[in-house]
Length: 502
Image (tube, rainbow, N blue to C red; front, side, top):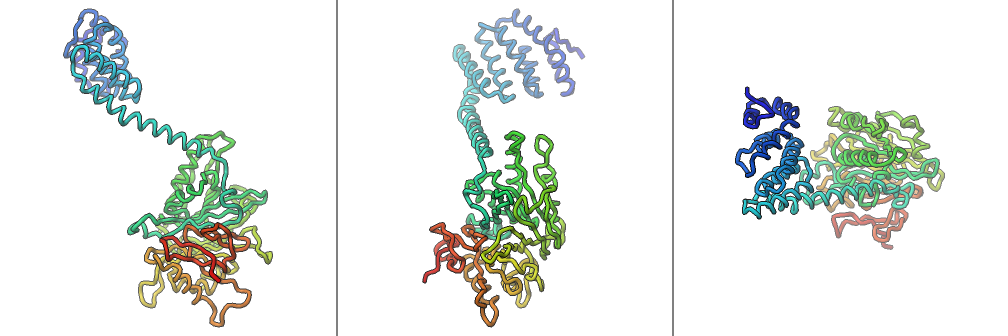
């Protein structure tokens, strides 16, 4: 095949080569091509339809050789200085080559120069006008928006810890609303998922633990003016989306933070999860920071075990607690088995009677005889109702339901029971259902003098202070004894916690 870099009349034959060979030939012969074009321009004054710079330039643009195309048109433009009718074409093509490399500012200037040249010789400038408009109306505003977003993220990632000021120590906050089926038929934005627990460690540092961070957890967390550095650990009882949906957002923020801070500010998060959670996120849990350190310290939770250490560090020293793992009767997606778990968090906080405070969290589970005994001694118990029993005389197979919840309360007898994980069929009835559970779980002979048993429905406004079980009154933001608080959902979709009228 006749193909010679010194002879422009042969360059049309480049198209007969396979794309890979075309690229190699052009890259190898580029300096000779430029020298040949220099001689050609010296002998030809006017613009030509099939000029050699377009033959070779178009091939470069079509084959992704944008730098080579820019170089060809740039050098040719320099040699055509003063020939305005030729300069218009060369500048237009150089603008395209630069645009395709993402050099938008340079490309924009080239298109403007090309348009000026075309005006002088009354040539068509529709392409340049379109390109200029596109960049002014779309590209540049988008670039500016991205820059502002990156700056906001950079500032956000460098925000100091704020959790102690926002929540304080030894507080349990509900960031949960409806259960897993809700996103399929929700009539408004009502999903929330998870809990946030703060505890003070042996050094007096307030640590925060997210529990089952499901739908919109990260949004609710961020609405509290908290950032990724305010989150120290995550407990996930099973792998369903309503308990894990915010995990990827959390881990993505963690990665971004660690990519943008000095080594001494790299943040690590401890994750405690079920077997299904381990399988679902094993790739992310193995992620390393830029210096090769693990960003996530994962501990598998198996029923019957007690977790006292993570990453060779005492959990009691690091977080002021240990985790007792309980059996839950709920099938996970990734194991196809009932490998979900519940937990009892044994804190270092003491109540007014100098007893260690324990927080029980059932996770999703059906009721089995004796399940409540696993949570005896828990002063606070979060239990997930899920839905109502659907068949006469039959308990639910994956959730507690109403009867399972009552049986659980009879066996566990916490001071404060927090009812969570409502299906949206409970809308407007959560307070009533909680009252029914409290009434039917109360012994037939009534409560003893020292029994503080109370069931309260959870919503995103609920906040509990652990050392005295006080609940934050919604309007005043003041913590009051839980016996003085009533839940009210008569005026809005959200539950309001207010002081009981005398």
